[in-house]
Length: 446
Image (cartoon, rainbow, N blue to C red):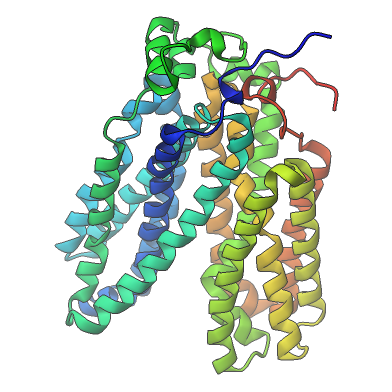
């Protein structure tokens, strides 16, 4: 019986892979920081500059609008111009517009800055994950990509700590320092990314095999070359439309659908946890503690999913994540006026179980598309999911006011169960496949 040839994807994790994880994951960390710091300081900026309710809402939503635009153009830029060039666009935007925010004196200027920083976040998703996945061994793809979700929460947590500290000690205009503080992290990200090589897979897709050989020799050693990559079809200059017609359209629908269904309730819960808990008749002092506990459980759920992703597999994890988190939301709707302990337990269960779907948001899109459209697929998924997040975030307070907490929880459960249906009908298993096999439309025996 012929033994399968070992390839670069079968080599163990090395120092370069670990450094690249930091370089790519740093983008998720900055994303979490940038998107969260505004929540800490916006009320102070609004009071200082006299923003109307309209502008407060628009500024709060500006980053989501920017992410939609950034995801769309970032994927195309990454696939067209290469991973390495676009890898530095996000950090530069973070630095420039973080500094400009310090001198903001109007809602229009702050909105423009937040919009551009959202664009940078949208660009980060496709470029950072595509570059990382195209170097990783197959056994490390899932856990390393999933780690980026955990780093997002770490960035968000730091934003709350820095913002709260500055507001307490830095005087009446501390909100300016809070907004500008992301420039420091953006600069650190820019510096740590210096020296990052181009993806050999992208170079091959552009017919630049000698350059790909040079990168592989640099990263893995002179004894390796493109001959040691798994065989992959070369689809040069293929348009997104042409590849969608070949069958990748269904994969794009799957990615966009499960990603959107997993973020709508999470964004809504995360943004309005105190308001939702209050509507569930949780006492005020419990609501504050409950909000912190739910945030911690979101992180714990992501960490647990990261540890289990290779053992459990992608498809079962996605199905179970949607199933049990959706059941928790259904029970929250059914027992909306139950005992406070029961409410907190069910909310915590939702936060814990949705972790599987959260970490797969960056795993599945990068595994299911070929090199030629990998970043575009991730970018479109990013953009469409943020449209859903924006709609969900807008509708939560409206629903609480007009329908009440029970129907609001049932609606969130309905969204989650749509994600479950998409997982059952469309989710493939890619755990043991190399990247070329995972992105191929040819079905393989289990």
